[in-house]
Length: 145
Length: 391
Image (cartoon, rainbow over all chains, first blue to last red; front, side):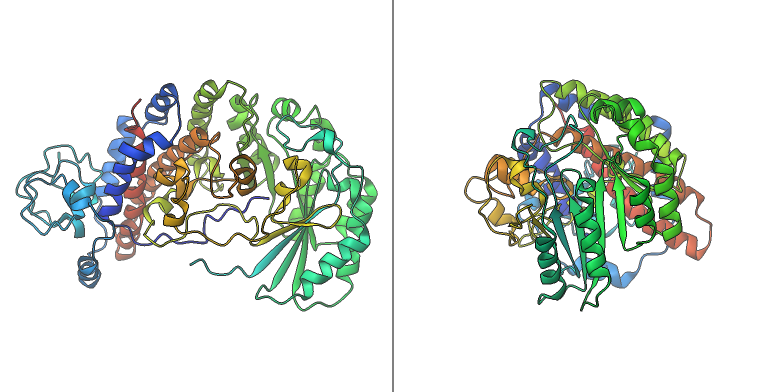
């Protein structure tokens, strides 16, 4: 008998550092750990894709207006230290003038972003996201592409 | 640390004997003993766990084998022994069966004992089931209407176990659709952890990906149905890793499970029984949790560095058997699980996009949108991560 422990541990709050850690793990260590053949890895990359209509629907859903942010929660999040070391150096926001504190790391290509992406983009990104956020970055909503 | 569970699963491996020889079965037929667990042994084990010290409030006694219906008299006697006495904690009984051996007398007894639930092993379509389970579909399927009606009458979940064999991958989606059409609500479907692929891994993965895509579409069209793990793995867990946290385990071997073989020897779970391992097990019955750091020491498993390990099912007994450590994972199922994680992300992206789009323009609706967007964002991230995996 296998127990499905799906619901017994609620995921703790994630951070952008964790996302960068996952990307790095995929790129350097994890990818090797997958122990797949080249053909299988190509298959993994190419299968179960989203078509353009599905992708557009997902982007629109990401940008749908939700409840106003809770200022108390944002302050609490901003006060949390980064949990995984090493990600500051990896931050791709090369000219971020905001308080990036490693939190921009999930956002690919936010060059020039002047806002604090870690606690949610306030639509003041003066630099523009240069198109590669692809709608995946929860912090840069509304200013990319 | 993980909260202690409030239940204990006590497995009684009543017999090695089975009337089928399934293609993926890990039990070694050459080693099968003809012995059946004695009623005295079964009673002693049940009494011990129903009265032992411990925080658990409930004991689930799970009859396994082999085919447990081949030890029907022991099952009946033990259930009636426990059922007719008072105990300091609750007790329920379960068993898994190939479903070919039910008699009218057995059905009548089960209809009188709602404390006993059971599940079939039914591998989808007739063709798939017969390929995997030596042409037993007709012998089993005639009992399914009664079993489903019994579940409805007794308020039990209508669930079924579906194993995916090397020859039946192209029939997965059709098989699941048939099981739902038959009346099953929950389908526990999985690829075996053992190496059953015989040089066909890449082609099997290719076929599996297509089946998962079909399942995503199937469940999107039927939002009232609960999807199986095949497209609903808890990939959100990958975001939760922190230094000091426990290295993830999936199954309940050792805790909350304990198993007793035919002679009454204790083991962490049924997969440690010698007919399944080919050798005796002398190790601990409980495996203290490891931290990530501990899992990465000595000769670390490649899985420690995998970003998806927290969402990846694994069999601790097979890990021990193959690699000498319950946390040093086997990886024959690795590609299948990664495809399942990608399918799970895709399913969630499409489902949440629809739900967000349909949310009303009210305060409550906007709160719903905000809550769903977090999950959508994670699903997009995971899907992107696996799409960028290059050769």
